[in-house]
Image 1 (cartoon, rainbow, N blue to C red):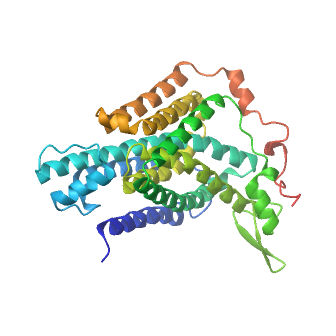
Image 2: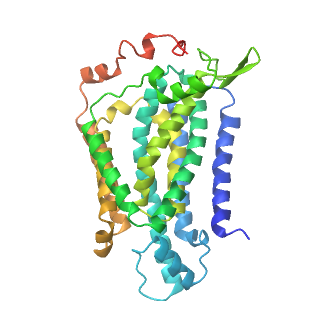
Image 3: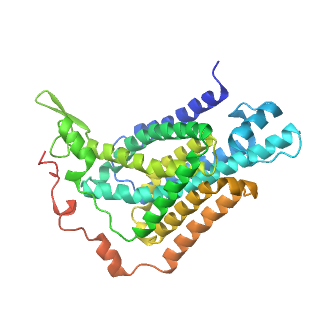
Length: 372
């Protein structure tokens, strides 16, 4: 018999895939440049979905783990939410406390993932620019990139949860890694990242083992030439987006485990953030330069998350609550965004960042694969 957890997981993924197919088949039949208005509308839709899911968890979250007795509730709490304190044996009261915490963990994890996704947007913009992808193809590339990201996040999250359940010390490893990432992000906050298409490991791997066309072929990922199936540079860009998300998952997945040990809550918060990422990408593309202190904020966010994981036993002992993390994350984001707006970049600094270097794709044609 299929458990409630598996049933709910399958229904959730069916909804997500259905929404993606609806977008691809109804709203994106023809490749087009996503307008600011369209991106804003879809961003609002996914935020509303996430908030609706928060309300569902707050009222019916017990259904996920099929909690129907106080003994089952205590067992699930001890497994995933040790910090939640039950003062009585009243099942309804304890269930209420558990669902309040569950929904709070979800919305906190979702907000944190959404914030960390902003850094992912910087990199995706760089990828599209470096590989000279036409803006009209952005949406299709991101669609397949996000579909692959969902599969990878599932693997990372449930593998990570299994490791944590078997060895609590894994949280210290995650915490130390996130502190290192936060420090590195702060030190490199003002450095201009660059990608050299010919030297990217994905390009080298693909060109070594597969046939790749030297130029883009419209919005096609594969073409057949002389009875031979070949990859196009656009498909390589999809692979690079997947590769990039794999790297980001190494940071973001452990980050949510600092909020909750429940792999289902980690997964739900991750997927809603990823689904909103594509819309947010188009929404923020033209205004990213306004938030120049955001990377500083994200580095402090990483430091806080890593520090919380390193000190999680001590924080549990002093009664550190999930809502405190929500307040701290909100404060970091509000301060970094507010500072960016109060102290804007000088026009010459923005111009220097926007001017492409001499060897950038803007100064070349599409034949960046010609050497292969």
